[in-house]
Image (cartoon, rainbow, N blue to C red; front, side, top):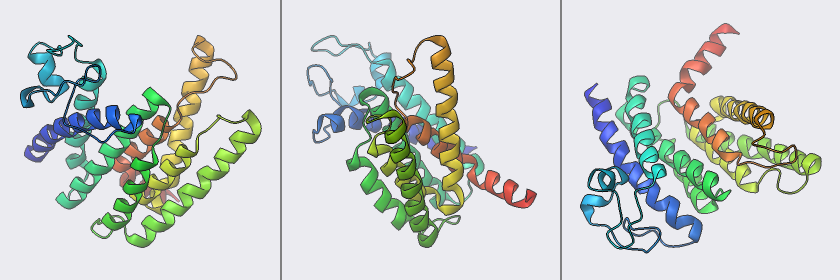
Length: 250
């Protein structure tokens, strides 16, 4: 329980970092200290977090831009994910590494929702890190991570090409393919396909609901990456339980 509380506060800080990266990376800017996305005013350290700005008044002192709901949601959401991880994962080294993975996937979700982009500057370094970090994990290893990365890439490359043929350019972005590769390195071969299947199912359910409600047209496009990333986060948290349950049942 104490460990969960520690990671809860770490998650809030990481959520603040994710907010900064989500603002700067899509603009091809070098990440800076927390600043106003409208006027560029650099916040005082007491206002680096969206939560702290909300508590202290919420508005930029220069242009009166209020703290955005996205900032607060990201900080709280990341904190909740970090808090939950120690409840399902025991070695502290594993928890730290998986927290980093969750942070990367949350960043992917935010950027893709707001800009319809999955940036190689995020996925490629994350893949390399995951391959190296697999040396330290108790439920992954370099071979499983490497094969998982290749399998994730090839599987979603086929999905990408099929989408292009059936629905035309733009149905899926190549960033979705590199995201599948990154998730494969993070999760290993034994879990990547479960994550991708979960992501595809979630995207399909959302598309059906959006079509029925009129929020999505028949030939409309939507950000696919967030659903894959959610599948990855779910498998990071519950992946071992799901894999062991299926293995024991077969």
